[in-house]
Image (cartoon, rainbow over all chains, first blue to last red):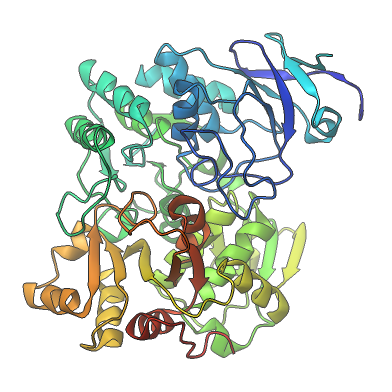
Length: 141
Length: 396
């Protein structure tokens, strides 16, 4: 399926469909200590994409590592309007996704989170990507 | 709301049922923004209480008054409200990332719901209790519900090692040094990731503080929830037992070059000719580690401060004379929190922080803006005395 611009992902957390630049992280990240909860900027100096902002992107995550506070950072990003437009995960992550579950409990609008095999990520890097409420991940122009 | 959150987590992870838990360790009371405070207060307003023993991880404030936290209003008040809300929910105000050294030691084989990556890995690996890596919100939700989703490391069949991390090729004097364990831990976390590994060829028996440092570093660089050390940790009487007599999927033979590379990665400062501070105590210092610090300082006056982060459980056992001697030397005791989770150290544009902690080395650059220099505890103390990096053996 590599290179195909339309892929159906499994819906992990239902949210608003979203469109943004596909940001494919080339290494796993710890949201706590790795992403600034106020701005969405990648703060981990050892991360290959240090300095990039995840705000408004369709964020493709090969994996998450480190702190158990990733959920809290994602909740604050959602609350501050600096969350990704959608999250695409190689595998479900109970820590990170809880940030979206709690954000919904708090009455906030949350982005979609879908599961997609990471071998399909590269086709979306740097392009405008939309993630629909049905889990469809596709190029949007 | 707590039960809904636990059920939703179970659905996400494909857990078929919920199981009762014996205790929880809650990492959710550290302030990252107002939403976390409002979440905790919503639980309080709903009349929720924890139904099992629940200790608290660090907060954003030092409620003991040891160290001055530079958190400004209104964040400061929101952080205090958050800490207060978790106490109202019935959590114990332990405020430490080393609850296992503050009297919270669940029995081997019991199911618990622990947050804080280093506490999770210690609980599973050294105590042999069973917990997944609980994130903020799910930890308190499980503590209130008294239940957790049954998947992952709660199930014995998922606790067997599939990867061997063989350190038998390393010199024994290196393996016996305190500075070896954070280096090996950070290498282990990167190499093993979220698989379960068994460390083979350790030789001696690392003490509890060494295992604490290894696990904390491993959980910083990888999604590590459980490790085994053959002949040392409770589920690894020997290598074969840790692997349930199966063949390993992978054997990582650690050589001295890999160690040198991992050690270099812990440092981000480029050949600094001075340091601005030393930070130790991630995870929080034990009483024994504080004694080692006192011996190494030996009554000398420090040129730059040593921030010694610990829990109120250790502070309570420290006599006023010993505390006064440490503070006179220039040691800044920090309790209930630490220098990497909340602003305590002065904001410096090009600050250099020396540390013996793999976890501080990992998180300090992103969280404090300081670049870091990794060294042994002895090197950290000598460098703090002179204000310049001093090497007494960890580089050889």
